Image 1 (tube, rainbow, N blue to C red):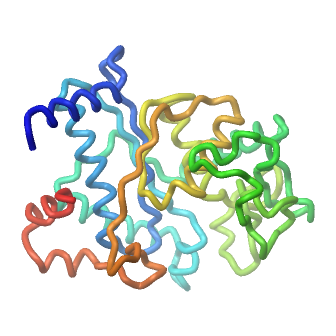
Image 2: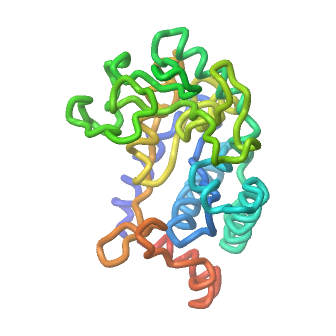
Length: 297
């Protein structure tokens, strides 16, 4: 790399970070602890570890929040007959072990979704009061964000609402296939411990409201950087942005998305069954070599 190119890139990075405060606040979407981590999870965490280290080395102080999604459809399914929270903690420990082996720093804050149900209820109620959310039309405890109430919906991914497919099966009382769940009503087949008493009935939070509520709890109504994998741009980050901004928060100043690891042209994912496990990876070389290799792309 030429010095001219390096200087140009460093200048762009310095323009990217606000220079007025000397402090950077980051929120990074952490793992949904439904099963053990694969290579793609490590890549994402490592990218933001590198960014954080670069900021610190450049003279900034950094507050970094990386959440843990410990209540989710797949957590409940994969736990089977086991206690779902015990299962989630076991999977979380496997992520922590891999992060530690790769030299990834602990975040400043590591909130768990189950610890912030009150924040999620409060944010959801505010959205209802402002006319941006509603309780399900079937009278259940499902609560949905009304995408038609927010004209800017789709701004993060440059999409128009009329061009999106939406949810066409299992409407659960939603008015439009584009509306997304803020809270999900408790199902009879699910453990009672996986639901909380809310103003709308027994329910558990949806994925998107979790991150908006936890980000606001630790970083306030606005912060510098929101990061995550490229696969989170839609619908997760698009929905986070809509619900937070419609609640009156400025939310993230910058959005960053790390590229995904691919296998034969396909995204590495658990659903496709093409993930490389941490155990397989550890057999290929030292952790220092693995860290370097993951960052070399």
